[in-house]
Length: 90
Ligand code: SF4
Picture (cartoon, rainbow, N blue to C red):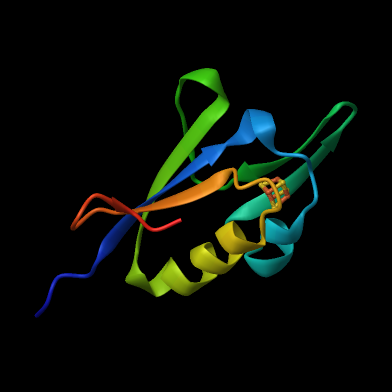
């Protein structure tokens, strides 16, 4: 059996402007938090790092959806790393 490809999503939550296209395209992983001034997306299953960065690892089954969400973000705060090569895909 071949190993599934693994990726990491890195989300800079502090710089999210709350447009919501990520949550529209991938509602399994992004949810909008409408809470006064904190009008941002949360990454479901994300692990908080310092400076408002959230990270999560995922496999190839979710790749297309995560890539679409990342490409839709107008402020480029969603990034994807290929964990096989350490290449930044977006
Ligand atoms: S698409 Fe980008 S700016 Fe819009 S809610 Fe998602 S992370 Fe925030």
